[in-house]
Amino acid sequence: MSPARCGTFFIPLPYLRFMPDNYAIADQFSLLSKLMDIHQENSFKSKSYAAAAFNIEKLPVQLAEVAREELAGLKGIGNSTASKIIEILDTGKLTALEELIAKTPQGILEMMQIKGLGPKKISTIWKEMGIETIGELLYACNENRLLLYKGFGEKTQKNVADAIGFYLRHQGHFLYAEVEEYAQHLIQLIEKSLSSYRWTYTGDFKRQMPTLEKLQLLTDCPAELVKNQMTENGFLQDPPTESTNIYKGAEQIQIEIISTEKELFTATEFKLNASDAFFERWAKDFPDSFKDAASDSEIFKKAGINEIPVYLREDADAIDRVKTLALHEIVQVKDIKGIIHTHSDWSDGLQSVQEMATNCIQQGFEYLVISDHSKSAFYANGLSEERIKAQHQYIDELNKTFAPFKIFKSIECDILNDGSLDYSDTILGTFDLVIASVHSNLKMNEEKAMQRIIKAIEHPATRILGHPTGRLLLSRAGYPINHEKVIDACVANKVVIEINAHPRRLDLDWKWIHLAQEKGAMLSINPDAHNTEGYKDIRYGVLASQKGGLLKSNNLSSYSLTELEEFLINYK
Ligand SMILES: [Zn+2]
Ligand SMILES: [Zn+2]
Image (cartoon, rainbow, N blue to C red; front, side):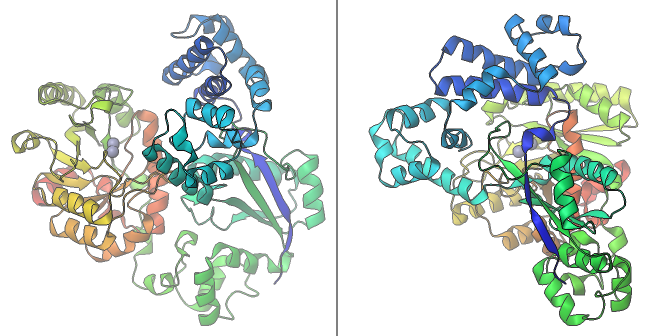
């Protein structure tokens, strides 16, 4: 079996957006403002574009749906911004931005993605240090050259070097959630135009990996025909030598198209969908199962084992695991009965508790757990003791009108530097449940991180451990923890482990779910939503959890309202 590779195509990310939504438009203004600062242009104007970006993100309506003549009258949008919005809506472009991009070296654009480097610092690096690429900058850090300039101390320099290292390791990687919609759209277009052939995604995307380097498509369409069609129809671009588009930060996603013969389609698909480890073991155990099978399920029938969903085809152990794992019990999006872990406008959320709850009810959820930030999270308007009291009264009132739907009183309580929680036991006792999370002083070694987290897990008030590692996929590694010990402590103290469903977090990582379940841990897929849109992230939490084989009976957010109420009384 040797599939012909007909080349790797590249597509700039901005094409992923079919009709610019407010976020896409705000991105352009934000980028414009930053580039103006880097070029040291009119700072009054740049500030006004930054403000426009901020205001656009907060608008309750989509700009594309507003009558053109009414745009300038919207809150925080003046005439000049309105005309630029119209340009974006009509042409998909912003000339002022394109001109600035054209005047900016590629390496400087890339630097904008390095954490800790704002426009001011980049301007110094470029105009004063004369550095134009990330590689040069890293080298300059090694040589302590940054220390000679205003605004760069030893600490900043080290942070910049670390961030570049991280960036270089993750270049060209994407979140699953960033590409999913585009991937679905792309295959529809291709299927329509080359409809007499079979098309399917294979590989990491099919295995629901939280981050992706490429989209891989398998077809029985001849390689030559694929090549002609893709570029002729404008579905895909041939690899440009360098990126020219930076809405999403000069990144591009690779599209790999693999052509195979009709007779080999199933076998090729099976091989491409398996991780190397899984396939190696499979080929050894069941060498005759896949070569001329007519369908995926026939392969498993021939091998005489339960059909393993593609998302589980990761490690070789999966083949043994499915012998005892209740595959039909693996959590599905429809199994999520309530929303756990949300923020409202009492802290850093965008909407009122009432709006968050109303939307839950409309979507058929049975309950909502409101967990705003605690008092130490001053940057997120964390709740003082007095405000907690007021919020609880407010929730009591809402619950009267919303019953049988229920809003639970919760808090996302900061785990302080010494591992203690952010309120007295008396205050903690007033919540229905407490989620404990680390938000500050993330730079810790494992010893320190473990001390801090274990102490919080052992606190009698803690019911859920929020985003256990604090990682941000593709941009921040998170603090190091001993996963096994954290899982053991959570089991021993009856603390639920969160699977944070935000597509950039997704921790606890799926790789640890098998072990957590074996040890008897309870987990919970929580959206950590800051507005009602955020509820959609549950889908990504579920997709990642499926990779760990999470059963719905071990997922707290799959519990019905009655089950959750009983759980809160009995599980501690
Ligand atoms: Zn948090
Ligand atoms: Zn949160």
